[in-house]
Image (cartoon, rainbow, N blue to C red; front, side):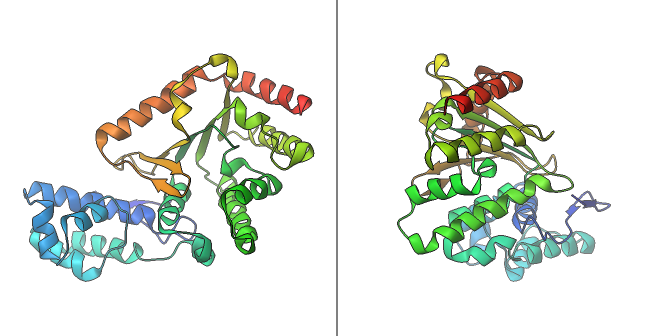
Length: 297
């Protein structure tokens, strides 16, 4: 990404046509937290300054919501920030934090929790995920995606819009500078013939094609491994661009998604992801495994 550092080391971000406002929110939130902690001001005190609660300060500092210019100005005054260049940079980030991601056109099928995830996914430099039930969404064919989404939603009139959105998300794989997508897939997901045998063979063939891309790594955990750390459900760890932003953990649930934010929780899930990578078949052996499953399907 075309990131620019100011003389004071504040990261400036150009307009994100592809990735939306998420990185701008995260960078601004991180900087405001640093400024608050440097002045030893509590989240509750900061919330009072902008006529809000401690929980809103927490959401702002984690980059989970947009910023009002008035709130940023009040917080900068509270934190004693007088340097005009830094104030201008942070206010520019505040304006970008309220822009709309390209997925806004699918607003009727994008609840708030998914809106946050899409911003993180589209901005990430590394996306690591584990899937127990399905092939990961970024690697699904259109027919397979339709079969998966039909299981989870009871509004058939919106099914095609959800399929369109899932296919549109995959454009990130073909950017000039795409993220590294590293997926670990349970054997159960490869053997569940969603969309019929022919559709599943097409999906497995597409998975093999995508695994040829230099920025896509596919690993399989076969049944022979037995129990493993991922039995609790799907897990995604996203790494935002830039070294100053922490990894984000996303746990998908039946009717929503959760973003654990405590450092100990994030480290735990990072450890789980690392163990899954170690316990899964290496990439070349995983390709051979997918070939065998495809022949048997």
